[in-house]
Image (cartoon, rainbow, N blue to C red; front, side):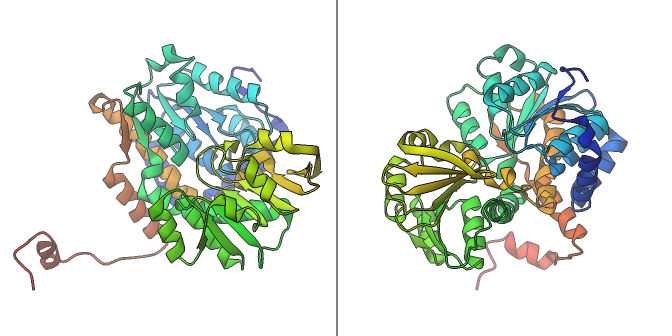
Amino acid sequence: MSREKADIKDLSLAKEGRERIEWADRDMPVLKLIRERFQKESPLKGATIAACLHVTAETANLMRTLQAGGARVALAASNPLSTQDDVAASLLKDYGLTVFAIKGEDRETYYRHLNQVIDFGATITMDDGADLVSLLHSSRRKEASRVIGGTEETTTGVVRLKSLAEQKKLLYPIVAVNDAETKHFFDNRYGTGQSTLDGIIRATDMLMAGKTVVVAGYGWCGRGFANKAKGMGANVIVTEVDEVKALEAAMDGFLVMPMSKAAPQGDLFVTLTGDINVIDKEHFKAMKDGAIVCNSGHFNAEINIPALEKMAREKRRVKYLVDEYLLANKKRIYLLAEGRLINLAAAEGHPASVMDMSFANQALSAEYLFKNYKKLDKKVYTVPKEIDRKIASLKLKAMGITIDRLTAEQKKYLGSWEMGT
């Protein structure tokens, strides 16, 4: 196995990986329909896609779809703890894809892998957090000249890319897959909500009922998790910096307060903001003995882990993915999954049926870019409405759901101003 072709943990895991990929494929009917069309039409023939995504069974089915469309594909992990090593092995052995991903890889290996997918000769980037794009706008600017466009999967990544675009520094057009309605309404709310809860319970085996859970951020991910925690019987506190979101959280029945007031009350803290140091030194000091802290936003920077390290008299791993920090005041703080994405580090990420829509958006956005890049400016675009609606239509069909259609009379009424009361 050539280092240029792949860097994975263990090729012998491929059988388990293939089984996992095939199981996920059962719940991804929209992506399967796209893959069948791609197989016939080869709309991505000539494209080389460098992908930086969570290496999971669901992602594997996206990679298969892009490959079926005629693209050359190289995949690296978008988070050091999110890789499913058996899936990486199957992608290499069973599907002949180029993969650079090892669960638990260190920072140096992580960035080496990103550089290796760039070396593959990318013409389209497919990112989850914008780390790949960041490299192409810094140390690998020379290689960016051949890139015609890219897609971005996450809220965090879209924020970073919009900042680049506003500064007129974005080197190629990006389609913000995260902003598609069939992505963030479902993936972020239902997917993150369920998978975050799944990861926490797997890591801790804690009973949610009766616990006080502090949710930092009430975007779509925060909404999803807060409601799932509430449904499990937890008392939920929401912290926010946005007035409208804070008001919405209050009207949804949650207590809303600053993190400084929530810190002494919480049994479990979950960050879902996409920002830095949302839980900081003063919050750790105020927490009760035995408080559990974790992150479900893209980067572990949401929790000020360096500050926690400095505050700790002692640190020890008490169980898999659970680190105990003993503070000077003899209180113990438990950090899950090193502050990495708890839903992917401790569980399996979003259910396949949700990722079906997200990755359908990725596949169709890649096709859209490949066909239309010459007409696009160097800015961040939303997914074209017709793609969003097509995916929703296919998903409804797969679920056996039919809906009403507007009559000619109703269309006329909605399109006129003359017909009032």
